[in-house]
Amino acid sequence: MKKGKGIFLRAAFCAAYFAALCAFTALTGCFTEVGNPGKTQQVNATFTIDYADDPPALPKLASASVGGSDTIRILHFRFNVVEVNYVTSANEDGRIWKVPDSLGQNIDFTGQDSSAVLPPVQVPPGDWTLMKLESRIPLHDSLRPDTLDFAGFRNPGYIKGTMFTGGREIRFVCQFPNDYKINLVYTQTTLEKWKHGDAYDLEFIFFAKKWLSAIQLSQAPAFPDRSGDPVVVIDQEHNADLYQILWDSFFKSFNSDKVWKENPVNWPAQAALGKPSTAVF
Image (cartoon, rainbow, N blue to C red; front, top):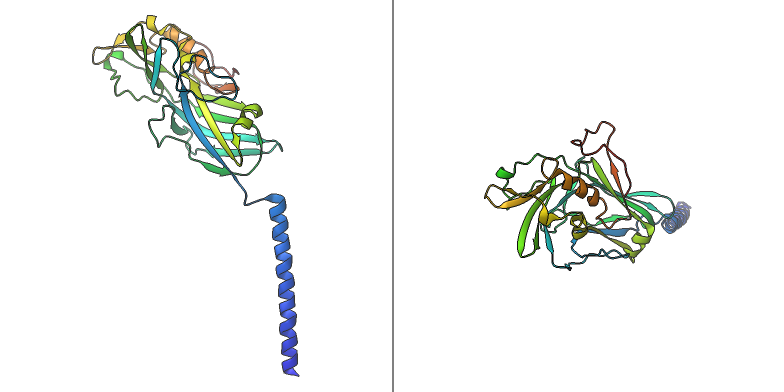
């Protein structure tokens, strides 16, 4: 009697365990089917300087070609990325990268520093309709050209480069715009061209020749650096008129669909060169 009862109890336990296991499996299967919690898509990012005469229309891809008689090379260009966010077609907000440090992750637009990049990440699947990259512009130091070592110059608040024109080389450094933050905005039309299967391959491009074409760099006054060789310094204290032009041109020289710049209400006056702005370009 006890033996038969034990067999019955074991059979009942097995049946109940099997039923519970089936129910759990069904629940798990349903959750995976609806929510896809384990499924992701990869996001890759590159930062490139384009030297073409005429920036290409969409899709926006970088080109290493240099047109015309002027040859421009950007030797130093750092970009501080604070975060990158997106909105999906289901109107859901998502975040790709977020840097705890308020100054952001230092990105090398020239590609010389392989460590100064945004690493590939995995995000939930979905189609994006909008993406925004936020960059914090570093505070600028005032330069004294006579103490400037052009070869070793790595100030994160400046872009450094050279232009070969008319048989001579022009060396230059240009201060970043005196704004607090720049936001590069990309719309669905651009984002669709960057999606390949289950991955987004983002390409952030700065059009150097378009930026510098706003001024006549060859006619700009130069200053002797520490070695005695001429350098065109463009900032709030040197060639201020050219700085104002390049300040405006800077925001129009990315491959983004829009650019927003942000300044806090208490942002300091910009050396009499303009007032804080939240303009959209």
